[in-house]
Amino acid sequence: MGGMPRACASLLAVLLLTIPALATVRAQFDTQAWLVPTEPLRIAGPVHYVGTRELAAYLIATPAGHILIDGALPASAGDLERSIVALGFRLEDVKVLLTTQAHFDHVGTLAQLKARTRGRLLVMDGDQTLLASGGATDYLFATTPGAHFPPVTADEVIHDGHRVTLGGVSLQAHLTPGHTPGTTTWTTTIADHGKAYRVVFTGSTGVNSGTRFVKDPSYPGILQDYRKAFRVLESLQPDIFLAAHSGQFDLAGKRARAATEGATAFVDPDGYRRALATSKATFERLVDAER
Image (tube, rainbow, N blue to C red; front, side, top):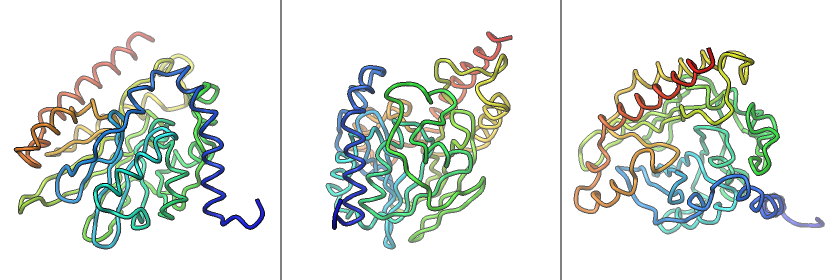
């Protein structure tokens, strides 16, 4: 590519991979709602929503730079960038990129955002190979048309209990495996108008169609991994819970109430317990059905 700067070359490569893949994604998955942009908003303290209407991404803004958790489909990278800028932040101030799961609908933007922000990508052990392969090593979607994404390499592979600290914000990583081998739940405590809130960014415990636990398991130990994930999540007691899909925590309803209630609209410990119990019950039914 001649004298093209490395960052520009990387961005062009991402776009070339994204454009032909988008039609395939749409053919295989109902992704129309996932692609619809939405207005960004501040949730509480330094935590902001910058994802699409359905696929979540969170910007945690600090005086020393910002942390971005998750992304969306590859085609939504520009929408995420515009949301960050619309909130008054600069892309180049994003210093750390984090994930909750290495699936195409949550990490599809990472390659472009990493090139644009030059932020460091930290990934839980178990998902780094999946990210580097662009989804080609996924235990369920390896051969699924449209489920791949521009590959991206982690700058650091982290482990259960790892802490990310930046500008007075400290996030702790909790390994909650199963949905992907390195699915990660992040917890932190933030302040909003003098009140402290425990916040959890949940790793998914959903079970995608075709996943096997008992007979010819999708990967060795997946049953035990899912059960570990539920144990970890049940041990947490968040005030505010945020998920990778906005519908899982009623972003639309809470956004409407936040106009008058502020951060308290997102306080929902009962909703967290209900969502977790529902997910666990679904998982156990699927396991029982295999026996």
